[in-house]
Length: 297
Length: 260
Length: 66
Image (cartoon, rainbow over all chains, first blue to last red; front, top):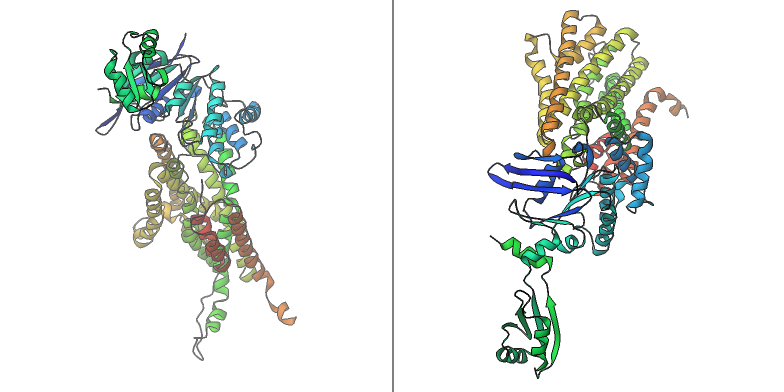
């Protein structure tokens, strides 16, 4: 894999407050990376520094394959457009400003707008656009010049479930040919479309790796056995040699080094006189991992 | 100046679609008309109001055409400049505050292209506006009073346009340097308080940008001391260029303050 | 009729025309614009009844961008 972007010791300080504190990571070509973290963790500040809008206090951002500024597309969390322009005019302007030749710019703009689903609204004024349409237009202005690196700040968090689904599918379509770095606090999105995870907390990068790696590090798998009543659950827990934690009518049994195995558990349960409603092996969702990372000191 | 043509097109579209090329010249035209008209009908107006005592003979000074044009320029100097400046003083600062600038600043364009595109559009609006204002004033003066010599008239017009370029450079520099409210205050202070100061204590010097509009009129009267004129013109242009340069630099410096 | 002929049209006409165009431009823009500062109907009255000052005020502070 070739590395596209290298970030070293990136730091941003506003007066006394250190907002981003020496973060380091690399982005490989044509991969998607999710930047996740609670509000105020420094996600937007980090992205702003990558775009070049904000100058880092120290550290550097290097694109190993060409000039950074000419090769990025950026979508802010709340993109603001010039309302008196039409969608086509705006996208065309974006293309031209990034050096797409005038003749080609209009064709490219049209194609891009069709790709993001605004094919029927090319000549409508942006002032009449809904939130979802604006987000699509925001994506189109970020990708019209085919940038090597696409930076997206909370690309779907302001959308309703349908709009979110559509925009996510759009972004997935781009994954093959573009390197994507996006911030989000909606972890389902990250789970769906990510090769690498970056956990940001208080301006520090506290965890990074592929979804699988992070999972392995933080997962505490267990079995859940659901009984009919709380009493039955308590009865089972007191009689069995398996140590379980009771929550309501559920018994949670921790798995340590793959012990006990599912077979052993089922054997135990087969002798249980009470009705069992459900047996399940649980792995932590990204949300639970996120909570663990967020609390980890 | 990368991206200049594209940005210029965008600025022209904006000014065109918000009617700036139409309504600001119309305001200049209206105020250009007002001085010749009110002066000519002053007697009728006073009579109509009806407070003139019996037998009272108004001593009306004999007005020359150039006096009416001077009156009109006086109108341009107050309300018209106020309108022009108020319309454009947010050109850069508002784009930052709203976040519209963000999607432009992340692209590989030069800030001089950005600044100059705004400067040229504001200058074009300004040029058309004073053209309309002068035309209206001259029309009424010619109909009601008498004619002008064309050469000095053109000289007066372009002298006023030079002053207008100075006003535009100051306005955009402030917009680039400060937030809209502060920019408005500062730009108005420089232009209007400058005018007041120059008329109050300006007898002590003869070379200043604020004197330029009056010097244009004096060119028509033939009473202009030419060395004062050329020096004032030169200094006005030099200060304007400096304002443009400062404007470009502060635009670049303030780019990170755009709302993201 | 004689009264009408006495009116100095060369003097009055341009003034009326310019004021009228300014008012129409303001009203057309007001009709098309997405949102204004303050209620739209207020601006309609200001533009129609305060000669050119209402129109100027509308263009400077009445129009709301974005």
